[in-house]
Image: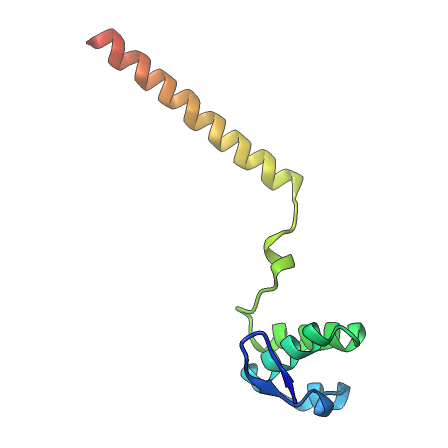
Length: 99
């Protein structure tokens, strides 16, 4: 029995490609993914499990899902911040001139 990050025990020996193909239980797949990730000895099996898990649980995200750099997204965010600052500067100027 291997432990997962959540502290739950999980039998990593039962996990293989066939088991992953036949498993549709989100919880079991999450536990298998965590155990495989902690074990770090089976990267191909880990990726296969992740692919299946994401197909079964559309809300499942990994740290990499949140850390993807997109230059276009950064530019949009920068433009939004700059537009906000310009608007605040203009509002501040109107308030000061009116006072």
